[in-house]
Picture 1 (cartoon, one colour):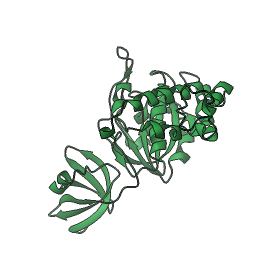
Picture 2 (spheres, rainbow, N blue to C red):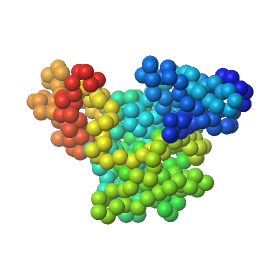
Picture 3 (tube, rainbow, N blue to C red):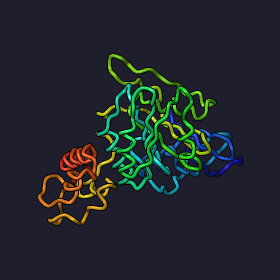
Picture 4 (cartoon, one colour):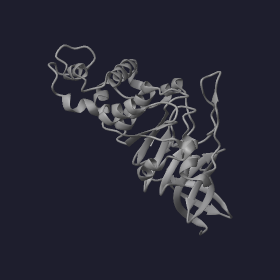
Length: 293
């Protein structure tokens, strides 16, 4: 690699250093003070320019992003892969639906992988989310039954996200044993996993790039993206055929008479659990102050 200016992708960030892949080499870089002045935070996944002098790298510019997430903090992703365990811990559908809504809001392709398929039957959940328009599959990482995930990842930057203890790192290890990522057991006292992934980092696996991210609890979702209540209806793709069919303009799809979405829920064309998640997000959105957006 040449001394002077170079360009590459930030693959991980830790301890104040940003590790940029450039020419097959991973270069540790500090961020120049101008980023702080401009209130720019470099993210894993960013394409960045940096200068290198005597082996030391300094970020000088973050190139335009096609998208970004606040949590997990990743930029320029092609898809969000939401990982949920079939059991231990039990699936948290409100959290899963919130993440799917965020992906829709950001116009990021989303897919769902249920791990630990040996512990519980997830056929009902697969039907539910496939019916909502998502690619959904179940795997057993410990037995190596993960081949269904490989075509999903090829040629893309995929971000794995999900509750603590659902087996994101175990799944990645099954896809590529050479990664040897640390995994943890479920805490019987707390009923959730221990945080074994401490930072967001991009790995090469299954013909693509995959970012493993720290797990979170349901409480942490308060720190996720904010969506206006008026925009929420577009974050549930199965609502789409019924939007515009409501009796009243500006229908909130929560309780109004003549609501086409509510009618679809009653007919079983929209899953009750998905509509309940919409209601919870709508109530949450009503509390958002304008200055928070």
